[in-house]
Each structure stands twice: as structure tokens, then as C-alpha cells.
Length: 213
Image 1 (cartoon, rainbow, N blue to C red):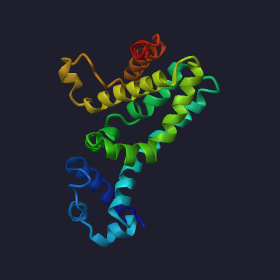
Image 2 (image 1 turned 90 degrees about the vertical axis):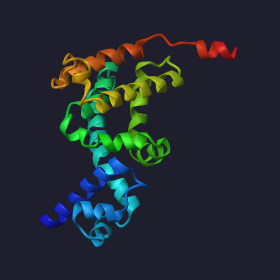
Image 3 (image 1 turned 180 degrees about the vertical axis):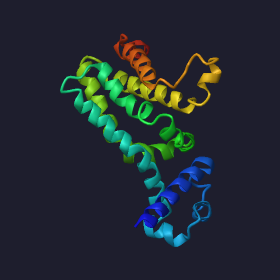
Image 4 (image 1 turned 45 degrees about the vertical axis):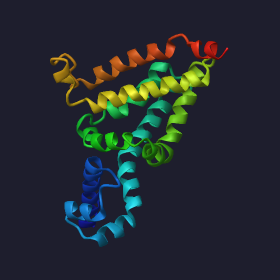
């Protein structure tokens, strides 16, 4: 049993590494078997197909984060503040195990984001959409007068800010001469919450509507 678990984990680790380096199309099952030091039968046994393996690699990283986000959102009660909603969204990624557990997935995330169609189909629709909808609805209850278009833009700005910190986590200290130190993760999340909450509370711009009129 232990050997079976180790084999499956080796396949997932190797696939994640190679998908991050070469992309899904640029990585063959033979590449993965060589990297993982297993035979093709092992991949067929555990994952049945390359498509199922890709899905398993993505699911392994995203589903624990989504579960924790929902737990934190629910723990904030029926009427969470915007700060609590933002923290529930950010903390599972930026606090728990960051950067050690998350940084290994950064190359894969970057590779997927460089091919938007694959991100929408393989990541967003299959693994993120329902969770994002819960956060959008929670923000809608905090800001009932905010148009949906503005709420969704600000939600995506929040996700973009988080992705920026993740993607540059290894070099931000160098870029800022050590001023931006990511070792205090709670302080990092607190700073982001303060910044993003101000963005959500900012007045809604009507330039788009005015331009159409």
C-alpha cells in the first residue's frame, strides 16, 4: 500500500514539474514515466489517461485551498465584513505553508496562466468557479448597491494582486532591497487586506456608462 501511494505521489510530482516547465502539450507520458522512474502501466493504473493526470495535478493544489477558503468564510458568520471576506480568500494561499507548499506550484500556475483558454477550461470551470461565486455573493451582500460589473472587476483585481505576490515571491526581497520581507506572512496578509478593502470601498466609477451615453 505504501509503495502504491509513493508511486502515485511520484507521478504527480513529476508531472507537475514537467507541466510547469514544458506545458501540457509539450510533456509526453513517456517524459513523465522517465522523470518518475515508473512504467506506463503505473500511470494507466492510477490515472487512466493524460487528461485525468493533468486534472489530478491541478486538483491536488487547488481543492485544499478552496476548502479552507470556504471554511474561513463560513466561520466569519452570516454577515462577514469585507476584511473577513478578503482574508478568507487570501490566507489559505499566502499563509498556510507559503511559500514552501505553494511555490512548487508557481511554475505550473504561470504556465497555465500563459494559455488563458486552458486556464478557463482546466482550472477555472472545473475547480474555481463555484468557490469564486460564493465570494462574489458574499461581497454582494456587503455592497448591495454596487453594480455586478464593478464587484466582479474588483474580485479579479484581488485575485491578480494575490497572483502577483505569488509569482514574485522569490525576488520581491531583492527588488525592494529587503524592505518587503515575506517571512512574516500574517503581516503580509494584513497589509493586503487593508489595501484591497480600501479598493472595494472606493466609489464606483461611472465613466464607462457616461462614455456610452
